[in-house]
Structures are given as C-alpha cells and as structure tokens.
Length: 385
Ligand SMILES: *Cc1c(COP(=O)(O)O)cnc(C)c1O
Image (cartoon, rainbow, N blue to C red; front, side, top):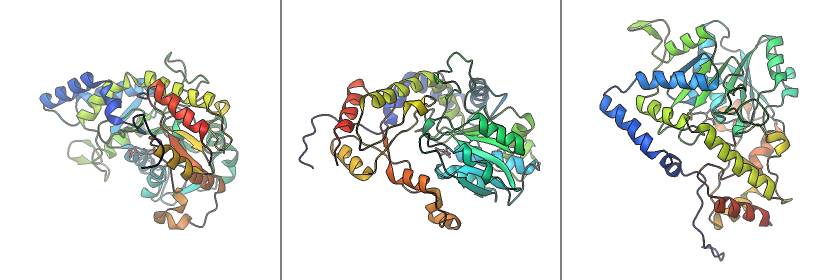
C-alpha cells in the first residue's frame, strides 16, 4: 500500500461484466434461444448476423469465422487460391500494428513489409507507401489502430495505380464511419470494413463489438472472394463432403452470433459514449508531460483505445495504479522486436519504437460514470514526475 489515501473504488481498464450487463436480459434470451433450439453451428443466428453486419458495414457479403486472425488469414489465403498472389509476394502493413495483422501475412508464407506510422495519427504513413512498393507487392493491409481511421484517398489511389488489393484490419474500429463527424447513424457515410477490397473483423470480447468468446468475420463486396473464403473456413468445401481446397475449420458458433445480433444494435450508441469520454479527456487535460490524441487528427475515431503518449510512461502507469486507475499498454514490444520475427529484429523503425516505449491506454468505454471520467482527467492533469 502506498501512503496515498484512496477513498474511491478502483476503476477497471475495461470491465466486460459491466459492458455485457447493459444488455443482460436480451443476451440471456439469445443464449437460451440457441441452447433450447439445439442447433449450435452454421444456423440461423449466423445467417442473420451475416445479413445484419453486411448491411451495417455496407458490403454485399459477410462471412463469419472463428476469430479476427482467421478472418485476415482467410482473405489472403483466398487471394492465393484465386491466383492473385503467391508465396513470397509482399504485403505492406503498418509497423506498429498488433501482431495478428502480421501473422496473417506470414501464416500464408507472404512477406510483410513494415511501414512506419504518422506520429500524429498513429496510422500507416501514406507518404511512405509508394517507396515501399516493389514488383512483388500484391496488397496493402491498413489497420484502423486504436479505432482511428487509417484509410486515406491517397492509399486507395496508390493501390489502384499499382494494381494492389486494399485489405482492412477492422478489429479495433467497428462502426467507424468515413465522414468527419464520425456519426454514421444516418447511414450516409461509408464505414470501415467497406473501404477496401476486403476486411477482417474480430469480435474478441474486449473489442467495441465483442462476443462472449472468440468470433470474427470478413466483409467484402467481391462475391467470388466471399465464396472462396466461405469454402476455406468450412474445410475447403462448398458442397458437403466435396473438398475443393485444403481448407480449415473456422466457424463462429451460434451462441456468439446470437449475442452479436443483440450487441450490434447498440454499437453506434456505445461508440458515441466512447467518443464523449475521449472528448472530455482531450478538452480537460493539459499537461506538458504527456500528449493526448489531437482532436484535429482524431475526429474520425471510435476510440477502441485512448492512447496517451508519455516519456515517463511507466511512472504514469504506476501513479494511476496507486490511485486506483487501471491502465494497459498497447503494445509494450513492437512486432519487429519480437523473438518470433527475428528476421526483422535488425530493422530501425524509430516512430514505431517511440510509440511502443511511450503509449499508455487510459480507460475509455461506455460503462465509465461521469465521476470516474472526471477523476481520471483530474489525475492526468495533476501528474508530475
Ligand atoms: C484483436 C485484433 C486482431 C485479432 O483478433 P482475434 O479475434 O483476437 O484473433 C487482429 N488485428 C488487430 C489490430 C486486433 O486488435
């Protein structure tokens, strides 16, 4: 125990129990319906979710699968089966992404080409894209990291000019819309997941749209691609016991689909609450020891994560912890510095490395009370090393 007297209850980084308790009755009913219906895989709950989610995102197809990593892996695998890319081809990806984006590439024996992010947006720097392209480049994978828009018209233009597929990793940005207000509720603005050729989504419990276990999906308006992905996720079969591809088993179970059908209805409203918490921090914290997201660059965000940059990051984390505020780091070690990617360990990516050394994620979600948000903002304001 420290000498600091903590009179208030602890604030969790993300309390999944509270997040799901918001919809307890509807979730209970959904789970009971599947339990008593007796049909647990590839049934009407998945079909309904695929329809609802494709309509929500704005694509003609949605294919559910077991998790977000599988969604990304299956997209690339399908392009390989279709002859669009082959082993040894290159895929451009932001260097500061979560490792799953890169694993999807290396799992397919494709080569990730790591590109630095912009220091303000923390998203892939589109001004560095063109010089990363070689004759082996086949795709650019953008990652809407922290829930902030990674897409730019320049990226789409470059992909078009060089004949590259544009793939979105939308694991952190469900519901993000392409207009400046971030409000897609009116349905007029395209959402992430519909901005490229195909997108992978994760419904890991802690994501903005989270299941009660693992779940994922691909969205695309490319019908043939969706067909190959659907077959690959189902043992490579389009017709029972006839195997076109050496596929895999990657299904979303009916309970997860039923729960997601409930939670999808509240996603826009809950993202709006995250945006309000983020705006409060941004408007009420001014401390030269840390850098908060700049609203000039962060209008297009659903704040899956609220990243604060602080050169004394570990001290700031300890300070908040001692005062009952739990935080996280996304992420402590950059992918190119990981043991599993020793072939990239020699790379020097200073912006990425600085982000990994200074990022701290502050609680930002729909179950924080106003008093909690104010308490966190006051602590951030008062931090002195
Ligand atoms: C969570 C996440 C994934 C992987 O999702 P899983 O469902 O855990 O496999 C992929 N990319 C990013 C950026 C993520 O945050």
